[in-house]
Length: 484
Image (tube, rainbow, N blue to C red; front, side, top):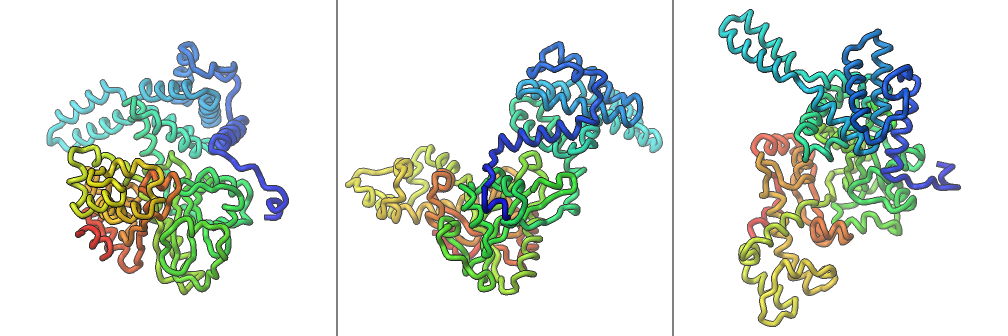
């Protein structure tokens, strides 16, 4: 990338990327919007006060009535979208609340249709008619408004970002929660993974795409352009999925290191001063970062599709690759452990007598008992060789229990990263002690990371066992930890 070798672009933040996206949407809809009437004939108040809210409802009704043909309908929808983009957070939330409540299903019509269905009895003709009426009554008008916005240029991207905002607001408002679920259902119906295009990202990719790497990297933040260049060197590969509806936006990004043997430390893996490894000599591909770029697409699964495609790409380029594994964070372990440590007699339940004795000795506590919670609250415990040695056996065992045994109510793994990889057919291969001693790594998993192994011959079997029976596949090393 010749321009970048002379002057590096400014690193983009998520906020500046959002501002740029909103500006692009305003420009994309400028020529489509109808400026002859509606709220945008004047500058709306960013808070969307009552006066403007009433006008907004009328404008939404105009969109639904679709008078004047397709061109007019698109203009009204673009006008509505530009209005949303002109509001601040308070105004946007009020906009969405109006959409959720004023344009929900007609509950009277639903009850009437349900009663007609009940009265239809065994009459097949009347029952079919009543079922059609009930289905129609259950469809909220807001769905048609969302479909009109989706039909605009960049409309799909707009709705993805809109759902990201709804995800932050849905917990405190059932109406917004219902709107978010409606929008997710629509996005799923419009989003066909068969159209996904896998592209490799290299140092010669457009600067605008490389800037987005900084924004979307969610596992190991990219420090600077030198760090990014190291992650795109010849012994690395970076791939992303793109969709025709968002052609310039990576949807999910995976970073891969080509190495000899399964990696056990992220600091070593990301060391910029380390010599470049000859990729044709590598026998292992390590997936060390998988980042969903758009929160608004959460709940739409295409990660497993990505991994299979990347494995195909790598095996085609490097026939010597025999092992495919991850070096993954364990984001929920520390929270789970802290919750267990809050319980009465936690140390007696979590630690063996020998482990408690070893911790007392390592902490120089004499004969006084010392709690695991107190030791872990010491910020630099991992720098104390004797203390770290005493903590290693119980923490490895407890983390194995957390990953393999702790479940959500539905029977899936409690840890979200574990659930992702187990769903895709991986097995829990190995825990790595003090593999990430960054502030984030210590706060999430007391410095531990885990390798998930993708053994190509077992992927489908593992996937079926986990999805069908909730069975977590583990290596003999993990099983030994669980038994200890």
